[in-house]
Length: 294
Image 1 (cartoon, helix red, strand yellow):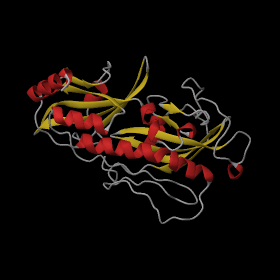
Image 2 (cartoon, helix red, strand yellow):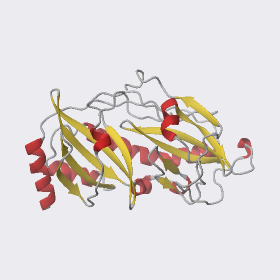
Image 3 (cartoon, rainbow, N blue to C red):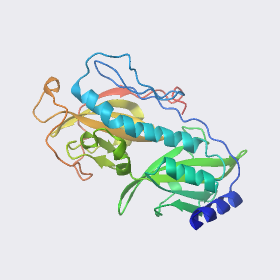
Image 4 (cartoon, rainbow, N blue to C red):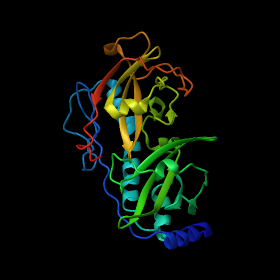
């Protein structure tokens, strides 16, 4: 047993005690002529395999590119939701075997002090955003965040631990989105971004307009956005309470939507692209916070 994991478990066991977490449920909807996507409303994700009609090529491409990644994220959420006790060495070994793409796990006490770390990579984060309770969700629900470090953006997912009403601390897992691309059937066509910045852009994905995704995902769960590089279909997928935006190019520059091909000429997206706040949107409204369990 690696020494750092043993120390991590002993420290957490000393500082933290049993708590419980509740389900953060989010409903994602897919808008199109033939609708096939996931629906998050206190039930496991499912796919409508009964829809056998022909879909536009970009929708098929989108499903293939995103599905494997979504399965992994859903499994991580379920595992973290059940991590309402200080991790044991056995739990950590199982966790890193199940999620080899996770860089590490950090334990914090109620004041935000680090009490233990485990994993293959230790990184320095500002945990303050995760320590703040989101008034729109249950205090025991999972909390997500994205931070842009020197070596690239990192995604964080935390479970809060409680002893009755007393907040004891957090267990935080963190990873790079690029580590999940092995689970995508076509990662080169996929773009993943967030309010905290661009997380992934495949070589043939185009350049998704840089806009205020935090504001957009508060009002809509999916839609389309256009700029000079084409039109992009996107859907938001919440990790805890934090929106991740998945997109594919729907139309190439100079083409009408019905003439679109699934892929466009390669061009790597950049977080320095000019904002496109005036870009037209075809959106699906986000569910009411009460309906979504927030």
